Image 1: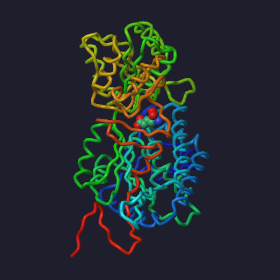
Image 2: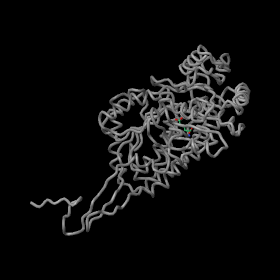
Image 3: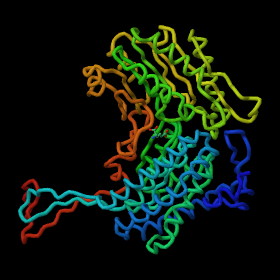
Image 4: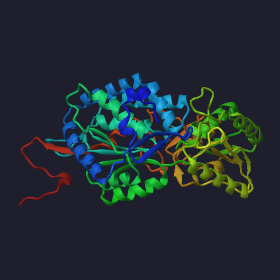
Length: 499
Ligand code: UN1
């Protein structure tokens, strides 16, 4: 069980974390961290009702004051950064530096949102009618439901929450069943930030602990103004039609099958480091992770030889240890899926280095793997599925056009990268007919985006955009107003209608 005293500042105190039906295990060693009581349909329904009431109060608070709440929250995050990062590591298994990076990402988006709280601007537009003004304004939207995955148990919520809060919305957070403690800790820090701000209504933010059926309930409920969901393509496919059925709004951030193209002119050392971080960072469990490599025939052997050596030498182990770079998979199903993908590749003639389970004796109830490098034979030209594990599929190419075509030939379209020092190749990759992804990088890897840019992807990756300069618009409703300050009533388009 979680050591109470240690995590007391995050509000994770004893009794209520020991009695429920939902067992939370650490992927580090399989140990039991807590037992939480999941919410049922009725308590979720009541939480939505409270969220509506909180929204109705919060939308009246001036946006810069709403920003003040987010500023205080960022302050609380700064104070508790190390502890929250430790909890992230414990609950989802990412290494310490990545846990801290995740909390930093929360702080970054909060700072960004505080600035935005004074910039939620509309337009004034020239009207075609004399004595008329045309104006656009943005108003708070309503309760925003945020469904998050285990791999970014705090940052992805913060991308949504910080912006939704300054936009005047209330929050309902359904975290992954695997990482509810992180959610409770964030909720506690937000409540602390709100203490002393009397304009913050009760129920402004709520955590809904539970499984997929709670996400379905949020998707189905008309009171939820926006469903922002991050997770697998399958999850998106299950939820999006439900929201669409009630003509509601959704913002989807789903899977990726991200590729790196390495051209003959590439700085190979740079490419190597970016590919390794992209493929094995967070134990391959990032939606932006590098799944595919298209390397030019001229540099193939050189790069793969280096990759094999680096993969073989990576320190896999307890993510709390200072020298570990690859922590555990989230669980046994992830391991099984990875092994199935490796078996299929092997059957089709691939050369595979790594991929085996390690540390099974020390951690019998956890799932550590050596990252796998899969070199496909020429007969296999692409891999279509996202396997959420440290597994890199390598292919050779001869013409850039063909590499770009293969990169784009998958259902997903989240992130992509090219390594080249040839300006023409780089610009070709970023052009209209280049990468079809929401994120396209040059001489930088597929993962590790900063919050200043819009984040999200095309096709099966969901089409949504979070973070970035204009993401706030998704969390507000847009109103166009025509104001007639004349004493006549001219109709637009010159229409005459005189009864
Ligand atoms: C995710 O995996 O869901 O760009 C989000 C990145 C991180 C966010 C990943 N900033 O890799």
